[in-house]
Image 1 (tube, rainbow, N blue to C red):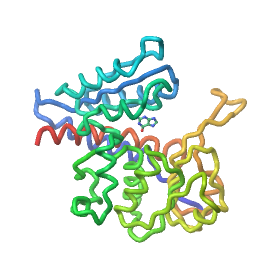
Image 2: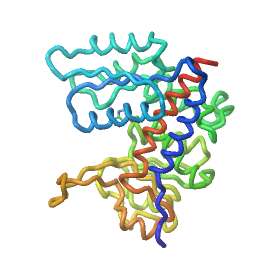
Image 3: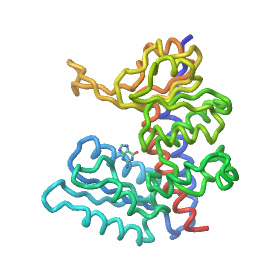
Image 4: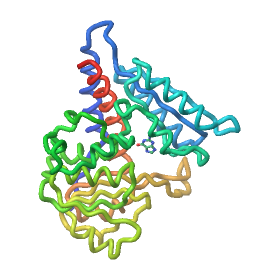
Length: 307
Ligand code: GUN
C-alpha cells in the first residue's frame, strides 16, 4: 500500500479562503477581528512563526498587533503583564497569543493565566483547558457539537484543532477508532487526546515512561505523533492501513543543502508511506493548519463579541 498524503497546505488554504470571504463581506466601517502577538527574546524560529502569523492575518483582512521584548536586564513579568492587561481591555483586540517558549526567568503559567480566557486564542488558559477537559459525559460538554468545532463556545488549542480538522476533511470517521497519541504536552498531546475522546475514539496516550511503545502504537487506527523526536516512529510501529498525523517539526543536519538542515517529522515518512493509508507530510501537513486554526479562533473570538 502507498499512503495518500493529507495535504495540509491546501486544506489550510481552503479554511483561510473561507475566512477571507467572510471578512470581505463585512459591511464597510464595521469592526474586524484583531490578533495581538507577544514575542519575547531572540529565538529565530519564534520570530519566523510570528511573522507567518502576522502575514496570515494581513492576507485574510484581519488586524494584527505585535509587541516584542528583548531578553535583557529590563525584562520582567510585570512588563509583560502590563501589556496583556492593555490588550485584555482593548476592544480592537479579540485574540492574544504569547509566542512560546518564554525565556527561563519568566514564569509561563503566570503570563498565560493573565490572558482573558475569551481572548486566549491559543486555548492555553486553565479556564479553556478545563472546559475542554470536561469529559463527553459531563452535562455541559455533552451538549456541545464536537463535530462542528466552530460552534464550541470557548477556545480550543490550534494545533490539536488542526489535527481533527485534517481527519474530518479526508472523511475519517473517528468514532470507535483506536487512536494513539504519542506525547503528553499541554500544547498538543493532552488536548488532541481530549478532542479524539470527545469524538468517541478509544484513546491511549504514550509517553517517555510507557512500556512497549511500539506495541501500543501498532494497535492504532489513528496515530498522532507529537513528541518532538525526529523519525522516532518507523514502519514497525504502524498497523497497515492506519492514518498518521505527524505533528513533529524537527530540524536535522542536511550537509550540501542551501540551509544546511531540513525539517522532518516524528515519523519516518518514507517508511510510513509504504504501510499507512493516509499520512501528513512534514512540512506541508499539520504546520499550515496551526495558523489556519489561529485565524479561525480569532474570528470566533470576534464573532462572539458581536453576538
Ligand atoms: N510555540 C510553538 N507552538 C506554539 C503555539 O501553538 N502557540 C504558541 N503560543 N507558541 C508556540
